[in-house]
Length: 313
Length: 243
Image (cartoon, rainbow over all chains, first blue to last red; front, side):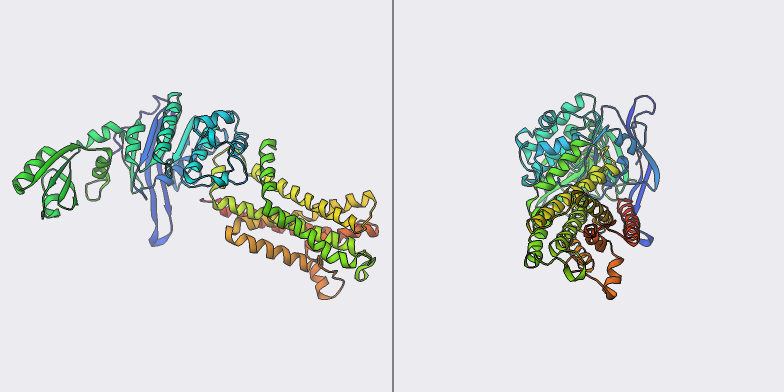
């Protein structure tokens, strides 16, 4: 599938741009194309979600964009310069998927230590406040829980007062409240013209917080569009019905049905055209009852776009 | 060098008490254990050097080696937890990172030397001020190849293997270099002369007058520095390529 929406080049200043990124691992017969021709561009001030299931190539794409990895083909640039230059200029704040903190420092000391390597850092107090972790200031880093560690790492990404914030699965390990606080902070940052790119496999996060989502599957961009359009794009609705004993292959072959899930006696049909699907369903299975038709979340749209055998890329 | 960054790097190293116990107190304890019973021996095994002075420098060499090689343990730990990777996404240069690590290693080594030298004076070691300074200078130079060794080990070892590897390698260098007893002749002496640890221990020769090290000493230390430096640079490049 084509990239659906692309910011026109030259019209807006781009924070992130990638052309034809390819990265393979392994050799011989076991070559894995982790990133297989990714094009993307992100304008200044946009908040963009990089969405995809595990193994889709999200982390590798981020590593390529940040210059941690050299692409086999293609190139990436941040603010029109090689990634490494933008990093050295202190314009990038990042939070990688994995990473512990160094030990034997208080949180505020660690934040001050890292602030010292940037040209125009925030004050330590500001960074802690923006990350919502003022109460952790005097804690030794080795005594923090996993969720607390994530929030301190977020403070370290913010302390540079970056123009671009790149976050790889930032809320992993956070509880619900911490997640909410985290995203509130992010929205405040975006209001100040900061560009944010975050990778996630939480559809609801992309849906709620991103202006736009770039969907990645098998190392390729399968869609890039405003999150509202991604949902509208497939016109996706789901039909739920109680239908004991119906064969899943039969259901999947119905007109307008893209994917079938079964939970006991209940079947859930993800539809590309729910009007046709409901007619076909009732014709073929008149015994279906408790029928509900609902608009799909981003997750359902995602299944339709990236699911195997549905004509994607 | 960035003073704030360096200050916290030092602070967190000195806060690690367990590390301190082993890196600094053990050489002091070993010093008293070996030199104490021989405190009145003014010419240890024909070296012309008193036992307290010989063991003081020997164990300062051992402690100093431990202090600088253990930089490898910290590098390995920061690599394995992803911290090094995160640092590469900041403006901190590789050089800046290593400068702080090396400065910390030397700070630890200096504390170790100071403690050992102080311990030496309690067992009657007395030297003119100039000889203390020259001896310290030689030891700091003699530690350079071990800094490179630490950086090398930090990039080839996993966190679990750093403890035994660093402890074992340092102990071996110390043993063959004559930290625990003077190596005066035979094959062991020939081997010892080719090791930088031997020349660390030989820094005590300043008390006999003269330069302390022979030309061979300077050559051996320089050769090990070049060789281990090249290995460290290679290991660093291999480690960060495609990371």
